[in-house]
Image 1 (spheres, rainbow, N blue to C red):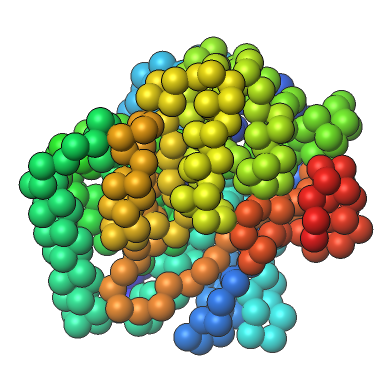
Image 2: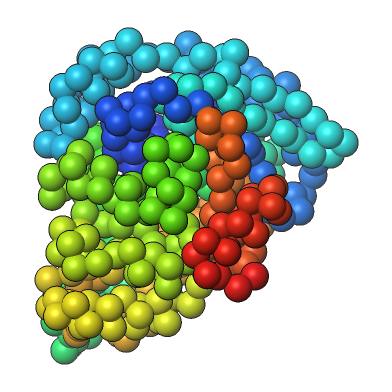
Length: 399
């Protein structure tokens, strides 16, 4: 059993944690928040058995601080401001803000406290649980199967790339696999092989540490927690929370990081708020639930209605993608709009074992429930049925 901690660098997280973190630190630093860990599928053995190991890993995580070279790298990203780097320089995770308990076979992890101090727990907690879980299942045969599957994906992408494609826009592929990876070492191996084998298509990783060390572009903008936070700020009407979140983003980044997430309350409700002002200012949209073709057609119809040339915009697909599905979506849309494909579990945890479907999501802000309705019923996340009903009523969404 390895004694090396799962997380050895605070850069081993997704870029969108830094971009949301900076915005909320600048604009709503007083927000209190609660994040809860949930496993949506049946694991091969009870996750409660990992409690002691998770506790040990959290102690190690809370001992870390950003190193000088890591701060220099973050500071070199043109959208990161110097005062945020100063904050990171003194930042440490606080062990008192995260609690690990069990309920029968179930593992419970809750991070609760000032949002700018607890929001960062999400990605390392998920990486820790995944790696601890799969260490018990790891064998040479499993690794060999993972390599065989990776080789097949690379071969399929190389064959696809060799075709004479009439589409106007390129096929851009990103690694979004940190949250549910088999292990940190395996994600690094996968990303390295994709970088070397597919330089014309593989454009970057959401993992900031891998981007730094492998010479890749770090990829990411916002996640659901960012827009959900605005549901509970009390400074805007619930009906206006998406517009307030998007406006703060525009003011924070002034043209950078222009991909907006659409499914916190569903695509239709999002587009009702995504008027000409926002549609011109944001570079594009990210899909994370519902039928991707239906979603993409709605996005293109919206741009057409606003008389915006879709060739100047980008649609990013990131919901449970496989290489095959990404290629299918590319064939459908590539002559009409710029595209990006963020593939997660299918790259970082496809070794013949059943991946854990785990999340650690924002559940409350300032003592109020927040919710994600999404365009896939199974991805709706909120324990407060009263608030869910109210949110649906406010946005005119049928349950």
